[in-house]
Image (tube, rainbow, N blue to C red):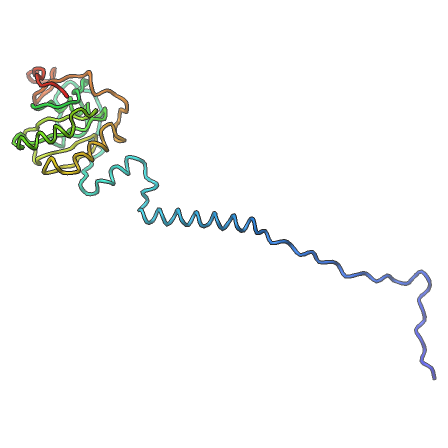
Length: 234
């Protein structure tokens, strides 16, 4: 017997076979990947630099200046750095002082061979002055070196300071470095860093046009007024 064939579907009812969908392959975003890689490398480089330099790249100018002196720098307690103008004597926690209340008049910057009143010198520090002081028994050759280091430089003040414990003190507002000799490289570095430097509370204020008075106490205070300095201010 012959096998029966399946009957043909009625005309018009034959189903159409659907073709397989065409798959579109996504393009790899090489440009985006390359840009992200470069950005990632830059970020890694910045972090490595920051860690290697202990964050120096992210410090403000004053932090950088202070850090450059390491343990040689002594910073004043912020509580002692008040800035009131007074016409009486001031007792400072440090000697010589490097900040605090002071006389309304400032000491003209320059070179003095006699002691200058603390209250005037602190006002000069508020204006950005570096005050270099030395013991009166410092050898003359050392005093000359100090004079050469500051003479003619703006915002510097040099004077002897009776009772000072170290041979030479370098003071600016809120900062101090003590050295034994005038030839110490820290002298020039301190002057360069802090004279009208980033620690200055009154940036742009003058260090001339005040007074050249000498002595232990300011004029108009509770003690005998002092005479004007006869030494030319350089």
